Amino acid sequence: MKKLIAFAGSNSSTSINYELVKYTVSLIDDYDIQLLNMAKVEFPIFSEDLEREEGYNESLVELKDDIVQADGVIIGVNEHNGNPSAYFKNLIDWLSRVDCKFLINKPIFLLGTSTGARGAKGSIEVTEKLLPRFGALVEDKFSLPNFKENFSIKKGVITNDELTEQHKVVLQAFLNRV
Image (tube, rainbow, N blue to C red):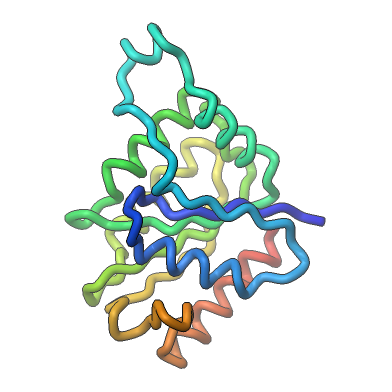
């Protein structure tokens, strides 16, 4: 059985991107899926001094190993001021130091949402350009605009029919690549 790892690049306990990632994995059958809640995973701010003095913490190495062993990766990219959050950038910085090709030949499904009309498109675009540096194959992207109007946290679903269909099509394209 093929393995997927899925997470949102947010350490917020109320992450709307984590809600979107949870919804996404709920639609997938016949895969071994590891869904990570990054709100429970802490990393210090990356510095070369810290790396040299303390090395890599166990949870970071385990995450890198889980990503390497997965056949595909689903990442919900949150957005702060048009860019990925500092937490997500820090996570990528650490992972890339443990293994600069930690995403080699990995199909990536990038998705993001925000409460605004752009639906985290800025952070998706930045991440789409960043991840191939580490070997990622980023071909499948989905943006959910206006989260509060288009997603029901209570039901855990996208409520807009057109966006639901778009999401389904992109998800299937990703699964076909895995």
